[in-house]
Image (cartoon, rainbow, N blue to C red; front, side, top):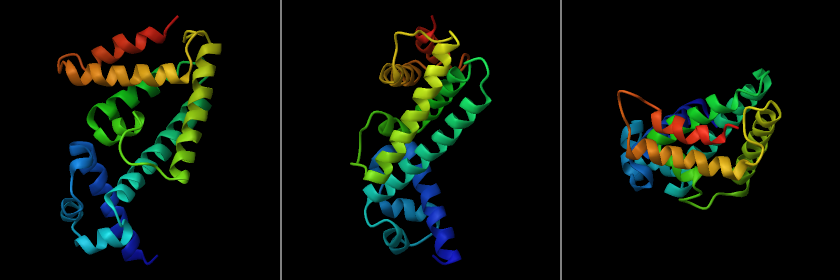
Length: 180
């Protein structure tokens, strides 16, 4: 891919990420093209459908989260990295509709490569959870699926009862259910 095509693709992905975060899947490709400063044809050359563009945004999020989870696991000595990682997930998902859709498995059907990226994230997340459980900072009777449901509950709580004077209060209450 030529340098200008790579730049245009990156601009489209960034604009799409912001648009999906603000408006969910309802945003049009023409609006994404406008926000990216490119023509609709440029968007369609890189992403023939809105679903393909959405998937590229989701795949990018999954890759970023996997890197962050790996870094947390490698840096963690006391099993305490799980909670900051979960709080980050809640903060991002509270403001990014596309991430929430991905966490809830809503939206477009994902291809095998994106599903594989999700599996990789789930595997490193399971290691992070096991490390926290081994360190005694997380209940031993929860599994990864329980934690995913709890994160979604924390996101819902933050959206429903956000308190600007105490950000993250509901997330703290919900995530505390994981502690022994």
